[in-house]
Length: 127
Image 1: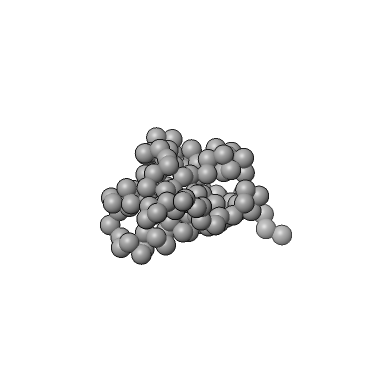
Image 2: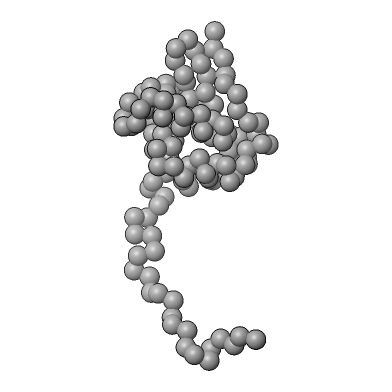
């Protein structure tokens, strides 16, 4: 019999917590992999391509779940992970696509722009 692990309710999902969870490179890689493969997906399938220990992977999955990014369902020995698209889109429209879709991030963001013009003495008055 499948059971769902505890997770925050939709209204409890906090932007700072979500962004903090996604700031870790391993968690961002996990989320991008789940997003790319489509879900639901077995945790072990995604974790197979990441070079960290099983306890560390479990920790990262827990952080993602507790941040409200994923739902984890336990079915026997399998743990199935699903991204909480609907809940996250209601709370933070467009956030998942902006962060998890690498094509949306130009590789040269900020490159080639002129630096801010220098400030000359006398342009800023300090009182």
